[in-house]
Image (cartoon, rainbow, N blue to C red):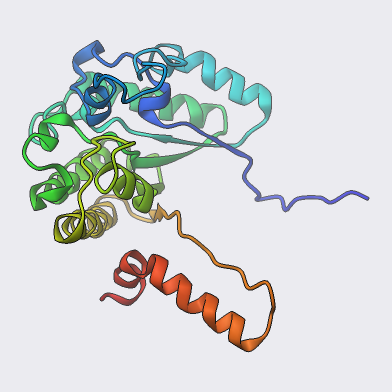
Length: 258
């Protein structure tokens, strides 16, 4: 038995900037929270870091060739915020922009549709030093950074994602200690972190809509989904209540505006 996929189905692959690019000090890139976190003794079990990766920053042309050979027609990659804005806001690093611009051009030349993730966990360390996601300034800086990327790539890229896995990157990075920056916050300080990230998403959506006509915009949510073992009304209602309890602090503002 065979099944033919729809003609417009996208076969995609994905990378994230800190996990794949390498070149953490090359061409003016500033440090991110993951660069600093990896320096902490015991933070990473094998003491590895994003400096020793598959080196996409240097091997991007070979990567695109491999994607073409694989037959994929979509590639989602994330932007290293500190590669294009080393201080998190203000000065724009032209070499960083040029890298992503070249990558987009060559993807399109090979009929591979680019999808951009703006934030995959690697906040510029300069912003973290001023409060990181605990500070509203970071949401405002994210809007500026988004506008800069849309100005550079919005004529060619129509698929944009704002933040990768809010619940994990903030819950474990700010609420826990096993992801960068590893602060272990609780209560109101952690709630402010989530709030500022949601504000950042909203500001980024506005910036993308302003600068990129016809853009498709979303974010990558890692919600927890309870499934009823017994499919009767009571168990289904319990799962619906559990879903709201587990995820509502993020999905409520997104879908209900409260």
